[in-house]
Image (cartoon, rainbow, N blue to C red):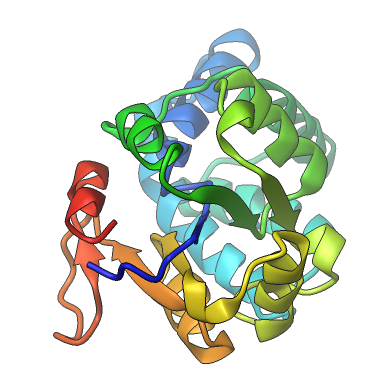
Length: 228
């Protein structure tokens, strides 16, 4: 347990906010109303790895926000061998962003661990998501009151793992790096990004992938109590 920690920074999607579950519900709503021939579970099976790959490219500034929103859908429909017009893809992309934030499933233990941490530390968010969408997720999931600051990549001008976003977040929080820790689900963006920027880090390893022994990790959010 690091007793010097004063400020705890969380990633949002896939860490506190259950992106996959909320995403599936949004697609299910779209397909049932407009494309009933598409089985949501078949689409999701293709979409999850494609979305992750597209986000990685976006994170590393290899594609734009517009390309991310289009490509992840186009490539998923291609993988299903489903013919669809660009007009329909753009319509789905718009509906998806609108519907996504209507769902607010959090990971098991999220509220309990935030209730546990809030009296002890200042809590913050660092997210690569888009400001308007992330703010809506936080508000709709009743998370606003837990966090002193929210840093997104639009504000910072760069995305995790770039150390500038961590510098920005620490400055905004009026914290110091040596007293700060980052918690997130992405080894590259959250953990290595934070460590390279001079913060401590804990990997939220919900999928239980093999990682180096020197990486602090938890498989369930309530295990954070071991470290904090």
